[in-house]
Image 1 (spheres, rainbow, N blue to C red):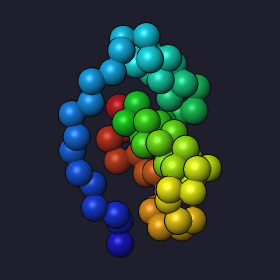
Image 2: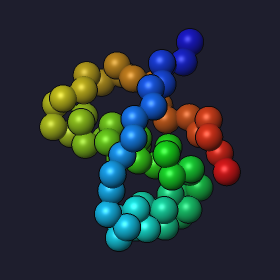
Image 3: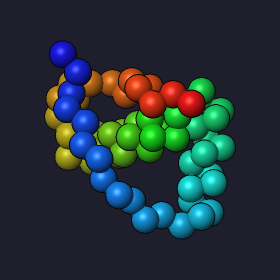
Image 4: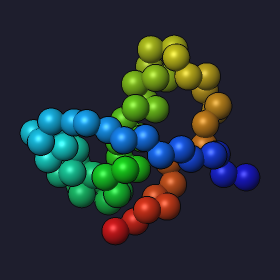
Amino acid sequence: MAAEKKAYPLRISAAVLDAMQRWSNDELRSLNAQIEYVLREALRKHGRLKPGSADPVSDDDAR
């Protein structure tokens, strides 16, 4: 069963958004999936997310 997804409006600088878009293109992910992936990895690295507690990023919103 897939994890519940919640919508969240995000204000982000144009430069950061452009960089994330380029990164997501390189990784063949949607921008949304890339942002979620980066956030999840940062949370795991800092012990804020239990290993295996969230499903891997699926590219539900592919371009």
